[in-house]
Image (cartoon, rainbow, N blue to C red):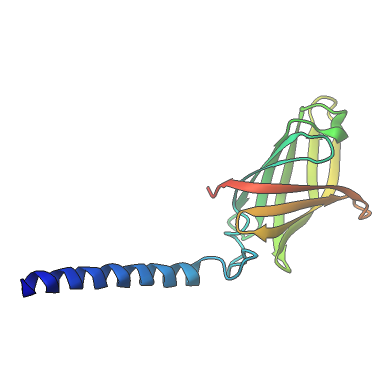
Amino acid sequence: MHRRLAIIGSAALLVVGAGWAALVAQASNGPGDRSGHDRTGARQFVGYWMGIDPLDGGDARRGITRNDDGTFAIIGRDTVFTLCDGTDRAIITVAGAAVADGALADDDLVIACTNNQSTVTLKVRYDVIDRNIIRETTTTQADAPVDKIIFHRVSER
């Protein structure tokens, strides 16, 4: 009977210890605070993101990956591109965004309109709102506001 109690007690301590170790590991490897910041800046942005554009109600999607040189590549689709005559015929690309001051930013977000072969180049900034929420802010090259979209991460890969 004493041996059975000792085994049960040891198993309970093992489970509690493993849970505590997992919690400590998550705290040291995961986001450092509620804003989602981590040591590398990469994990807070990498993933597949979805949102709704408040200007036109279109479904907006962004895929963010990390390049070998530490910059980030972004590819995007919207169901409505107001800057492409309101069609869904365009693609968004960013080749070398970088993390600075806790945000991911680049001055060369390109919207390539496939309906009329025109391009629009904007500045973009992604601010972390929470671990799985970012805000995309786009401006013209002269810093005039264009749009703000809230994105929710649906996949980290």
